[in-house]
Each structure stands twice: as C-alpha cells, then as structure tokens.
Length: 344
Image (cartoon, rainbow, N blue to C red; front, side, top):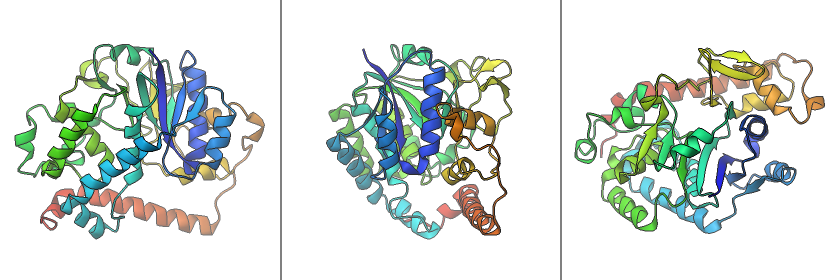
C-alpha cells in the first residue's frame, strides 16, 4: 500500500510550491512521496526543484492527462449555459480548464493519496487521513458546506431535485482544493456512466464558477462512493483552514483554539502576491512570516531581509488586479440574477 501526495503546479506558483514541499517535509511526520501534476507546460523551475528532491516526481502519464482534459472539454462544451455565462463575464471559453488535471490523481502511482492545491501549507501529520481511507473512498476536511450551495450546484435547475436529495445536499459539498482518495476510485465503467449522464443533460446542475470543484462534487456525490468530511462528522475536533481565520502561531505551526491545523489554504490570494513578496516587496499576506519560514526553510540565506514598498506602477497594477478579483466576487454575489439572463 503506497501512500502519496499530489500537487497541481507550474512555474507561476513556484514560490508557493516550494513552501508547500518544505512544510510537508517538516510537518508530515514521515517521508511521503509527492507527485506534481502539471497545470501546463510551464515547468522549468518545477522540474529543477523536483531534481533537487529525492521523494518528488513529475506526473508524466500523457494518456491520463489527455483523457481528463478531453473529459472536461466535452462536458463543458456541451453545457451551453456555462459557455454563454463565461462569455458574458469575459472569461475564456473553457474557464479554468487546466484545474481539471487534478483528476489525474486517480490514475497515478499512489494507492491512497491526498491532493493539495499549491496555495497550501501542511501544518501537521496526515496519517489519520490515510487511515480514514481504509473505510471511505473520498475524504475531505473543510467547511465548504457552510457556504452557499449555489457556488457548487445550480439550485435553480429543475434537474437538481431529480438527481440529488436536496434535504442533505448542503451538508455533503466540499472544497476541491484539498481532499483524499484512492487510485481508480472512478473506474472506467463509472467514468463512462457519469460522462453519459452529464452529456445527456445532468451537467445543468453544476455551477459555472470553480468548474472543477463543481465537477468533483457531482462525480463524488452522483457516483455514490463512500464519502466522509471531518468538518461535518467530527466538527468538535476539526479546525478551520482558510487564511482569513484568526489562528494562533506557535513555532510556525497554526492552532485553532488550541487544536493544531492540518493545513492552511491561501485560497483566492493571487500567486503574483507571493512572487512579489519573495522578490522583496512589502505585500500584506496573512501569516506572512509563516509562509516565508517554509518558503526559505532550505535556503534561509535567500530570504528577503527587508521589504520595499511597491512603486506607483505596481500599485496601479495591483489596483487593476483587485478590480478584476472584485468583479469576480460581484459575479458570484449576483449569481442568481445572472441566471435569468443566460438560459438557453
């Protein structure tokens, strides 16, 4: 039984990747093999980093990558409402297509695995997660279920009540930025069945923003595989994980009311903020010293000793970036209103 960790990454998130790799080495409690899933072909820095670490490899199964790329393309291209919405919002025709490559984890070398988005730091041992996979097929540890269901599924769709039990659907949704599962959890026959259902019209129940997350939730819940979320079933012991929460810091480990976090997720913070920070710019990032500790754990001499304020040009660029991020946030907040305008 081989346990492992997958991370989706490319050179754009290099600084975050290094910090995550170092946090895993420091806090996992044992050496765990790691496989990097390629977000795209921008991998020069990633490959150099892999070469310097004996337990890290690059996922190179081109057949698996091609399969899941095509799987996602066919599903979203056959979902006209999503296509129309993305065009109206100024997004690419296939929004965040490369994020679907995290599905390749189910085809990789590890019998049991934990998936991490690159914008994550490991804070503690994860053996308890692997042990839970002895009973369940899919394991999460997040509070996505406390957010609005509409960010995962289209609650206005007439099909949703035909596909899912709406009484408990809210409690079952999860974040696709961190999860655990098993090799071949979606065997070929199951993949084909789910694909046929989606193409036949069930894709209509998926939300348009965070498309990979919507698809993961659909496939896990529609397939009926055994699913467990620590934050739902063991909420007294579960901790927060989002950077916006108030945590205590002790020796570069985060604690939530005395309980050690498993991971910290920097979800929604631009990768460019981390790049600028590591370039010596004074960027305000939550738990900044913790991030810098892990980013430069193996190369402390390279850690910036002082930080300069950004130039007016950089402030303008940052303002533009913030405007775009706010636009996306506004789209999310007005999601239901947009639905009335984008029906087929």
